[in-house]
Image (cartoon, rainbow, N blue to C red; front, top):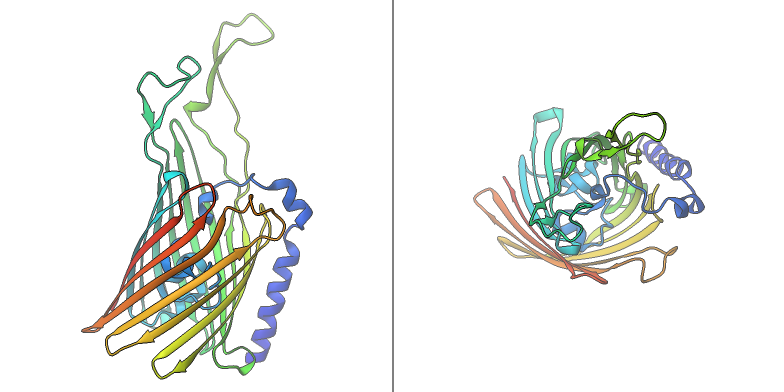
Length: 348
């Protein structure tokens, strides 16, 4: 039974990759995705691993990376808040909670929002923004997740995401789904993990609102000047298929390690390979972690892939049935300041 589930999982991975566009098609569609904020990573632990932890992520950390990991949550409840300094002074705030409901499984709720600051409002009449008016785009994503341990080795999960974008007087909304599977102890090897996630599956999005109205005179007829609305185009969501493998073990009684690798196929970008590693050291009530990772996009030049090495550290303090975890991650970025992420997680 277990071997059959493994074969079905692998076949599912191959079928998903084959169903997505080839590299040639990707080249023609780069930069044409809607709701690209769905791809912005959250959570310091997994980002420090280069985003390669598709097979090993678990608990509330897994909501973004692979919802199947939610079913493997070791605590009855977990909560996490994360803040990220992204490119171009954009701030990313993320909060998530998850709770176990007996044999039903684990439910999770997450919210991600972007802070663009105030942007000068320019118009055709005021191209320099001397009027002193400003606007601030509002982008947020609300996610509802469900994960469950199907067997002692297999877990699965799904996330429903509601997407909202508002830029001045135009807005857009959409819905997307994430699906994931994780398999522990692949081919009977303890510590060997396989993970698959399919993310951002949903209908296209387009903007609408009074900001698309323009005053114009009809080219034919004798109608006076009147408002006309520009019809915005519909853009696809940045759907991805991710396949990951991992291996975790112990080097000594209080020393653990984990190695991760993943492949990402993006329908509107280039294929990416990621690797990451983690080393942990345990004391009586404290666990210390060091992490490093990187991503590779072979089909683009170094100047086009602005993200570089990732690194981070974490500390978990266990007291009175409560786990407090503080994680930090750093990611190199060309042309912009480096990304920094701080996450605080509570489990009980």
